Amino acid sequence: MAWMTHALSAVQENEPRWVHNALVAWWTEIRSLLVTMWRFISAPRRFGAEWADGKLAAMNPIAVVLGSATVLLPADYGLQRLLGWDRRANVDVWIELARASRPYLFAALTAVVVHIVLRLVGSRRSLTTTVGLMFYAGVFSWLAWCLGLVACYVTGAGSVIPNLASAATTLIWATLALVGAHRVRSWWCAPLMLGACAFVLPMLVNLVFSRAGLI
Image 1 (spheres, rainbow, N blue to C red):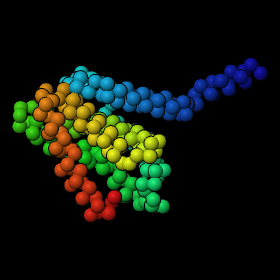
Image 2 (cartoon, rainbow, N blue to C red; image 1 turned 180 degrees about the vertical axis):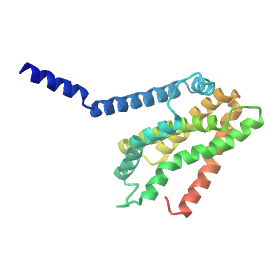
Image 3 (cartoon, rainbow, N blue to C red; image 1 turned 30 degrees about the vertical axis):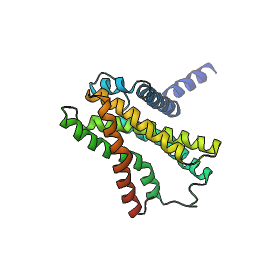
Image 4 (cartoon, rainbow, N blue to C red; image 1 turned 180 degrees about the horizontal axis):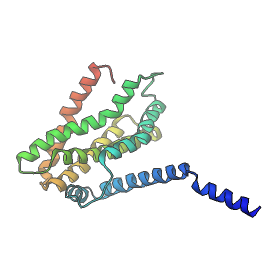
């Protein structure tokens, strides 16, 4: 009987522990995502400077976007349905993809515009650094939007709360992160960010999406 128990244990040791390995990999990614976003949220200027210099090990911006979307996208549109803002019974998959990509299209276009100006005033950072920091800020902005939707549900207020929460987080945290990375003064970088991401680009993107029937 002992030999059978020993043989069974040997077989079990050689079996793939795919469930355990999957859970470990999942938790590692979640922890990396949470640590990266906490560092960005708690100290955006330092995060921007150290990440741009290669001194900070952080989760890849694309990975942060994809990882957060699995939670924020259903939360966003689930809350909008709960509030009665989205009454369509069925939404085409292309519309869902457009909805998910729109915040990061804003972020990427804003990064391009802001980066051109920063280069003109002497910065030597690459465009990918600016875009990456805008993606980090975009995730936080989306989280603020979802929290604003919760506030709307609790208080009965209109869309002004999530819009202000999203705009404020983008303006403040993205500006501080870019100031740290590009080593420029915030007093003129903030108006630049405000003009780029609060007026021109959202209007342009929304117009294109509306004409294409994606919103």
